[in-house]
Length: 205
Length: 233
Image (cartoon, rainbow over all chains, first blue to last red; front, side):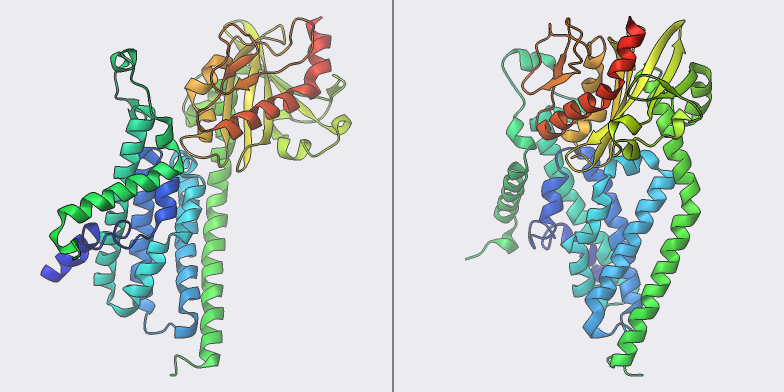
C-alpha cells in the first residue's frame, strides 16, 4: 500500500517531471498562456501516458532491446492519433481548442521517459499508477504556470475577467510580458526555487 | 525463443506496423463520415454567425435552410457561373488558380427582411490556413458581421481571431474608401483609430496572425471588386 502511494505521490513533489527532472519543458512553455488549453493538455497526457505505460508493460518481455525506442514511439503515436480522431468525431469543439497540441503529445519527453525508465521493467498495474502520478505532477505544474500567466497577462482565469475594471482605472495594467514564452521559463524557475527551499529532502549542502 | 535475434526483431517490427496500420486505418475510415458531417455543419454555423445568427452546430442545418435563400458562383469579371454549387467550392483549391478561372461563391441571406451578401475568405496564417466569412450589407460596402477561424494559430494569441471580441469591431466598417477604391480592412497593432471606418484592433502577441488576416481579407475580396461595383451602381 505504501508502495502504491509512493508511486502516485512521488512524481507530484519529490520527483516531479517538470521541476525535478526538467522534462516536458517545451510544452510547459508553449501551452501555458491560458488555463483552459493547459487543463485539456493535462487530461490528454494523462490518458496517453496511462495507456502507453500499461501497453509497454504488457509487451515488455517480447520487445527486442535494439528496437525498443521505435516500439515505444509507435505505441505513443498510435494512442495519440486515436485520441485525435475520436476527439474530431465526438468532441469537435475540444479538438479545435487543442489543435496542434494533440500531435505534440508524441514529442513529450515525459512519456518516452516513463516508458523507458519504468514501464519496461515493471508489471502493468504499478506502471499504470506511475503513469497517473507523473501526468498528475506534470499537469499540476502546467496548470499552476498557466494560471499565473493568464492572471497576470490578461487579468482573466479560464477566459473570465477576474480583475475588476476599478483596478484598471487606478492605473493597473496587464503585463504583456507574461504571455511571451520566456516568462513561462522564469515562472517554472521560481516554482523550482520555492519547491527547493521548502522541501528538506531537496536542500543540498 | 530468442527475443534478441535478427529475424525475431524483423518479424516483430513488421507485425507491429501491420497491426497498428490496420487499427488506425479502421478508426480513420469508421470515424470519417462523422468528422465530415461536423465540418459541414460547422461551415453552415460559421456562415450564419457572420450575419449574427448564433446557434449550435446541430441547429445550423435547419437555420441555414431558413435564412440562406440562395447561393451562387461568380467569376472575377462579375458574371454568374452556371451549374456550380457554391457550398461545395473549396477555396483552398480556388486560391491556387489564376484569377480568371477562379470560382467565387456568394451566399445570400435574408434576415428580418434585409438581404446580406456573405463572402468566404481564406488565406495563410502563421502556422496554417485561416478562413472566415464576411457579411456585407445591401450596399456591397458596409460590413454587417465577420467570423474567422483557423487551423493551428497559437492558442491564446493568434487563435483569438476566432473570438467575439476580435470579430465584433468589424461590424459597420467599410471595404471601399471615398474614391471607390477597394481598401479592405487594416488590422492595426497598438490600437485602431476609433473614427476610421477601415481599421480594427490587432491582437497583442498575435501580430503575425493579425497581419496575415489583413492580407487574406484583401486578397479574398479583390476578385469580387468588379461584381460589387457593378451591383452597387
